[in-house]
Length: 141
Image: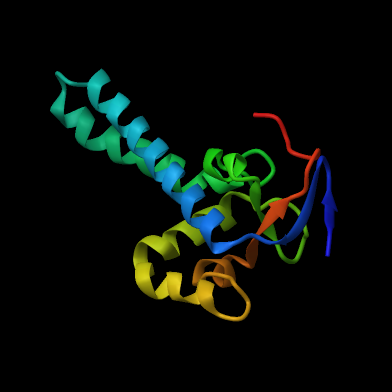
């Protein structure tokens, strides 16, 4: 099945390995953002305590809604998060719901990936799925 929206063509459900590695890359990026904020405010502990978590969680929770459903990690692994009802890229609210469920339910959430539908609990909550991006249709960063 192919889903065509705007500038991206989406294929079938992405593999567990691609999803895992893309998420790992996104965590590293979120940590790098937090580290930069920490370094910028090295002399102001109070601001660090506020801005470091904001920087980390802002990227991590919302990144799947960027660039046609592709965080940097997902773009690197040629996958995207799409809304199942609109058949288009996931929005900010869906990205937030997907990632919040992963933070709250962690292992239980991940177990859903090995189910027949190959979707996490967060995907069910946000009504999304992670799919492959077909060649020659990737959005530019």
